[in-house]
Length: 150
Image (cartoon, rainbow, N blue to C red; front, side):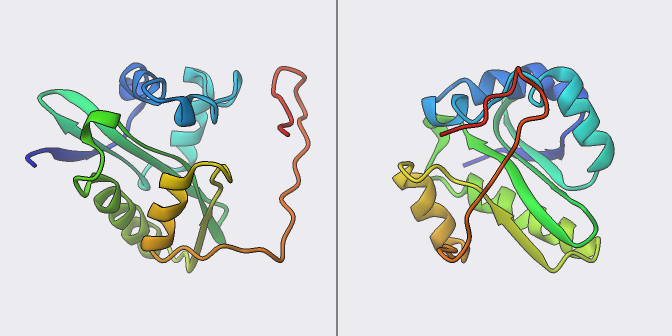
């Protein structure tokens, strides 16, 4: 498959937001504050070298947003348009993000995947991401507009 990859900038926001809304699994991972243009702009300012988009014919067909705190990294969003899945795009984006994080001195990366997203869980397992069963994921919303989850 012929596509190009580039670093994500805020100018890509509308296309990325459209991509995120191309599938239910991606759509349900969004929140109304952090995934706004302003929220993503803040994210990209903190993580300018670790976020990548795949493009075909001028359209973004895949994206990965990864960032770190200086110690550990997290995959915050990973999405490939349903029409372009199972073509190696996701694995390519993950590889680019991992390489970029290594260059920034990061040694460990994690991501969150909905338990019922079998395809995504299988993908991350194939990419070498182990399932941690000895931890509880806890969160607290500091903004009433952001749901706390299930």
